Every structure is written in structure tokens, then in C-alpha cells.
Length: 103
Image 1 (cartoon, rainbow, N blue to C red):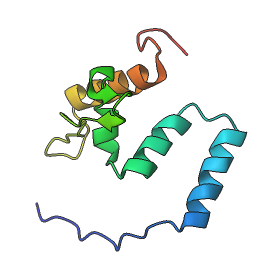
Image 2: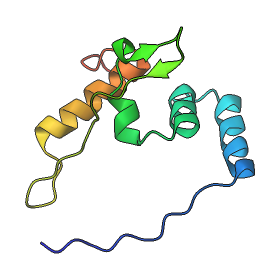
Image 3: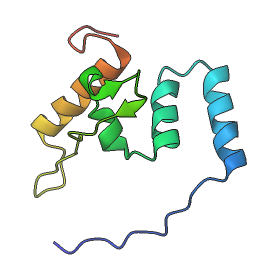
């Protein structure tokens, strides 16, 4: 299948970024820390979601990117079961919740 052309990427200004993070803090968004890691490091979403505590060295202020989370679709454009489960597990780990328990 031919790939769809991507639109032009637009970066936020410093003011827009500050406004976004201020809003996240005001509404107590549980993913605020993740957003800050992505914004301040330039990591891609999949790289940030693939982080484990073993990849973080707080004393040296270093993050090691060993793996990333990727979405896989089948030939019909449906999210595969394995990719969907990996996404659920990564988000649950980031939020420190049990994905098998109802919200």
C-alpha cells in the first residue's frame, strides 16, 4: 500500500509549551511528568513509553533509551492484539496501575 504523505510538523513555541505544562499541573494530569520528560529531552513518545526504572540514573541525570514502544497494524489497518497489549501494559506501568483491574 502506498504511504500517505505526512503533513508539515509544527513545533510549539516556548510560550505554548509553558502554557501546556501549566495547564497539566492545574488539572493534575497524571501524565504531566511523562510530558515533561518528552518535552525536556526531545524523546519520541515511543521511546519515553519504553523506559523502565533500570534505564534511569538519577544521580548522573541520565536516561538510557534501550527500546521503544511501537504500534503495529495488520494489513487491514487494525491495531494488532500484541501491539495493543504492549501499549496498555506500558501505560499501566507509567501510571503504576494494574491493567487487569477495572478503573
